[in-house]
Image 1 (cartoon, helix red, strand yellow):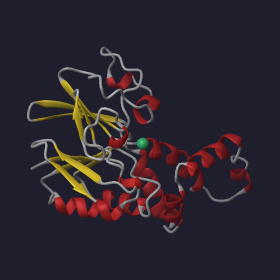
Image 2 (image 1 turned 120 degrees about the vertical axis):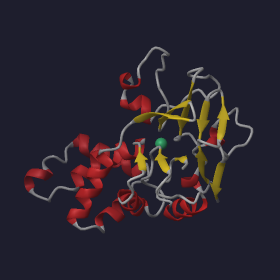
Image 3 (image 1 turned 60 degrees about the vertical axis):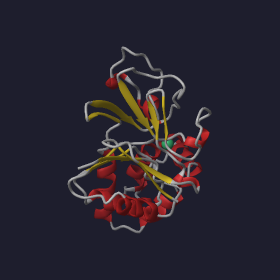
Length: 234
Ligand SMILES: [Mn+2]
């Protein structure tokens, strides 16, 4: 039994499937996905539909699910005069912002689904948690998409705002805790200044950063928490 963590799949269905094969993912294992399944790459909704069938996967929300959810709930509605009235400036702003962040592939696949499937997908994504604390082999890990923005050591996890958890970038040179490890996606490891191996998983200062840039032509990374073994798909 292994506990695996990956992040920022960004529609890379093929890399995701190859990774499951590589880690020999079975029903005895557990997989955590730290958000940003959606957008950019070609098959985000196909990944979501695969995840929906698995009982041993826990997905956390990233900024892309957060952006998508507000818009998908709107796109789920029938086109009626009353609903079009809800296409106000705020909703338009959200749609444009999401579009600028690579929504096209998500929207394309979403509209290929029938109505019942669309509802299921939105329901599934809306149940994603924002963070999770787990214990593996006596070590404690905080799993979160982006980081713990506006960090204070005495702050409880539930006290962080959504933006702090899905948008903010952590300071990877400063440990948050001495007795816990924080595992994050969101910031590609090639963008971490202190990282000696850009594009590979970064482990230092009680941080573990696992977004190796799969959505931007980089690798998909995955880490096994029992062994700390790293896996990569080009
Ligand atoms: Mn992100």
